[in-house]
Length: 569
Image (cartoon, rainbow, N blue to C red):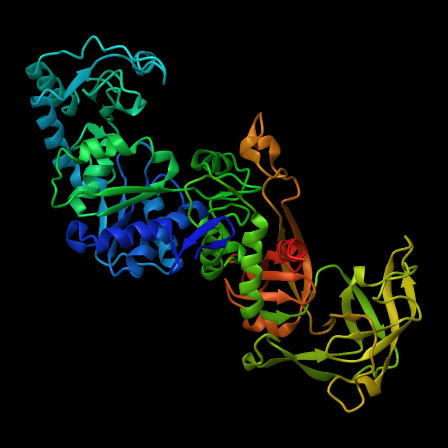
């Protein structure tokens, strides 16, 4: 029986197609029945949610079938790499709950073996040094329907190739002046087989190996061999590497035999509406200060999602829902938001916060009287208990919760109308006070002491319930309201400069939000809260003992769930 979950197809037994192929290989006894996967990020940027989909598969499959998963940094380009990225990548993987144990590797660990293999291939007539420019080499590659043209250096004598390659690594030649190419087939229908480049000259010191090397291997040459050196059995990657697979196998077979050979399996990338996944474009946004760093809560980076308040369990749930397939898809951000909202609904502590405050004065409540009400920390889980909240004569309520001349179906506060103050009393509006500009500065009401929440007979029904904060006890907080980074659904498909598609309203800062005192006394960075009736928020690391800063994680309105309900009717 086949179960369909969103876009992902799950086989019998709850396995996706990648896991099913791994299971079949293990059952067939391939590689001695051993499983070893790997996650191979380049340390030239921060991980985003698309990378999370990849390493959830890598580490998850290893866990499911009793194998191991290596973390290997593909550090073959010292011009773009930095230790900052290495540390950030490890931190993000740990945050999602995965660990590589003692299996931390770097492609640079294998530079000696890769160099020796290149030398061997030169000696066997399988590689040559080409002195053409990158433009000339590209022009001679041909097209998918027209064969390429042989390089004039393709038949260079083996001894000359070997001498030049050694001198390339000694730094005798300029960057871009020479490359080492594999001699395969310039007429092959697969463009990647048309004498691919194996090594290029880079004179920037490597952050691990220093100035030992002046030549560095290309991805297609280094990747499969690194898998082989580590004992990786399944190299799981995304669909853009499908045409690379024959070349992966070609190079691996220079080392492997029938007893052990890594296998490459491809799945679809994670593409998300209202954002971009290109590392180059994300780096551009950071360097041009169009966002506030890699961990800006509007970014699809894992550190950005973490700062916004997204949770590891929600991200994993989202990845499970979209699944792994062999065709590309554009995933709806609403589904990710739905997963986050479902998770936070179960775990976030409820507190009262008034974002756009106006003062409410309860005129018949004694001036010096104060009461304490106890609010549920989470009505979805009553075992989480309650917390105290002071009630006084003067309260802050949301300005939008009052209308002087309301429409017919306005169930919040208006002249001569009743509402319940959440967890407290029913009140009735008796008047308002305006300033010289006509703006309401105070709202007056009377309370019914017989309607105190929790007392017998206090269950008189009114249609509206408002949240509130005591004026003398309120604490001021800053709230950063985040929205989607781009104003269009699929910015990658639009023509022109992607930066012109940024949402100008993706961040609004509210510096004077009124928060109940219990929250400010107990909150710490990355804690999750639901602001009653407003949405989910998390405490930002910028918070200080003097002032809390909250990031808006997600609103309460669940458009995905609403659309799914309509579709199933």
